[in-house]
Amino acid sequence: MRKIAKFRLEREKGRFAGNFSGTKKTLLLAMLCVVTSIASAQVTFNTLLDFDGANGQNPVDVTLVQGIDGDLYGTTEYGGAYKYGTVFKISSSGTLTTLWSFCAKTNCPDGDEPQAGLTLVSGGDLYGTTLGGGAHNTGTVFKITPSGELTTIYSFCAKPGCADGFNPSIGTALIVGTNGDLYGLTGTTTIGFFRLTPAGKLTALHTFPAFVVQYPTGLVQASDGNFYVTVSGGTGQSGEILKITPTGKVTTLYSFCSLTNCLDGSGPGGPLVQGPNGDLYGTTATGGEYGNGTFFELTLAGKLTTLHSFDYGTAGNLGTDENSGVILGSDGNFYGVSEFGGEDCSTGCGTVFQITPAGVLTTLAEFTGVGTEGWGPWGLMQDTSGTFYGTTANGGPDSVGTIYSVSDGLPPFAEPVTNYGSVGETIDILGQGFTGSTEVEFGGASATFNVVSDTELTAVVPTAAVTGVVSVLTPSGTLTATSNFKVLPTIKSISPTSGPVGTLVTVTGSGLTGATSVTVDGKAASFTAVSSTEITVTVPNTAKTGKIVVTTAGGSATSKTFTVT
Image (cartoon, rainbow, N blue to C red; front, side, top):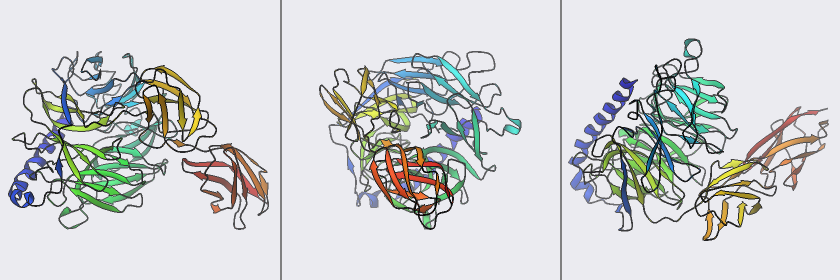
C-alpha cells in the first residue's frame, strides 16, 4: 500500500520541480501583465493544529467535512495508536479528538491507511474508505459515528478476480447519490466505479481496462443525474473528464491538452463543482499559458473554456499544481488551493486563492513552511460559520502535516446535509445559532422543523416546496443556504393506465409544481399543472405504449407503463 502513496508523492514533487524552473525564466515578462490581486488585510490565516504522529500523521488528499455537532471531521494516512492512520474531529478552536486508530487488530480487519476524506450522511454518521486492510487486505468502506463507533461496511476483492475492485481510490471521497446510495471509485491502474447501499451491498457499475485511465481524483453527480469523474491518463495521457450514467455507461466528455502547448490545461485534479449556471468548474495542475495549471469551465455538453492560467512567478497569481479542484463559496466565488507556489517559501509551499466565475484571481494566503505552518495543501472546505478550513500533508514542527483556517469575512449560512429530497422527507440542516429559530423555508414554502441543537435542526420538505434555497430564521437573523435545494418529483399513480392517443391522463404525485416537460413513450406531450400533486397530460399522436416522464427543476419522475390502445 505504501508504494502507491510514495509513488504519488514523488510524481507530484517531480512535476513541481519541472514547472518551477520554466516559470522563473518568464518572471519579468509576467510581472508586466498582472491581472490578479493580493488579499486585503481582512483575511485571517491560522494554524489550528500541528500533527505529531500520536494524534495522526499526513492527512493525504483529505478535504475536511462539517459534522452535525459543528465540529470538522477528517482522516490521516498514518499515525495514531497503531501508526496506520486515524479518524479525527477538531473544533473551530483547534481541539482535536482521535475517534479511531486503524489496524486495531491483527491483519487490520478495520482497514488501514485512509487516503481520502469522509462523507456526511443524513442522521450524522460519516462514511470513508481505507486504501488497505479489511478482510482481503485490499481496502474497505467504513461507517463511523460522531462518537467514534466504527463499522466496516465492505471489504474489497470479495468477488472472484476482484471484480468488485480493490484499493478504493486515492483522494476520491465517496459521494451520496440522489437515490441515497453511496458511489465511489477503486484502483489506480485498474479503475472501478461502484454503487454501495448504506447497508453494504455493492454493485460494480463499470471497470476500466488497466492503464486506460489512471488515478481518479474526483467524483460528482450533476443536476442531470449523471456522474462526472476527473482522471489522469487517458488517450493523450494528459487527463480526462468522464461522464458516467447511473447504470455505468461511460463517455469521455473532454480530453485535456487538446490545444497546442496544452493551453487548455493538463492533469486535472479534484472533484468538479457545478455552478449556478449548470456548468462544471475545476482546475488542472499543469498546462495553460504559463505551464502552471488552469481554472476552467466545462458545459455538460463538453465545451471547455479556460478562464484563468496560473503563473508561479507572477505576483498575485502565485500557484502551481492546483490538483484538488475548487469549491463554490457562499459569496458565489470559487475557492481552492495550489499545492506549490507562493513567495514566502523558497521551495513553493502553496497558496489559498479566491477566483471569480470570470476567472479573476486573488491570493488569500501563502504557506511558509516555517514554524507551525505546513506546506503542500490539498482540498478546501467552508463551514457554516463562513470560514474556510483545510489540511497540509507536510510541514509543522514534526513535518507530518497541519490543519489551518482562512477567513475573509464571509457571513454565516445554513446548509442541508443533502441538497435534494422529496416532499415529506426529513432533511438535516447544519448551521449555528439555531436555538430559538422560528421558521424554516424550502423555496419560500414554510416547513415543520425541530431544533436538535444550536448547530443542527431537522425539517420536513413541505408539500408546496419548489426547487430553491433553504432559509432558517434565527434570533440573530436569516441564514440562507449557498445553493438551491432540489425538490425531487415523484409519481404515485396515473389514471387511466391505458387508452388511445388523445387520452387525458391524470398524473398524481408530489413536487410537480413548475414542471418543464412531460413525455409519453419519450414523445413530448402537452400538459397542465393543476397543483403540486397533480398534472394532466394528453397522450400525443406519435406515442406508443411506454412510460410517462415528468421533468421539473428538481429532476425527473417516471410512471408505470401507459398502454396506448
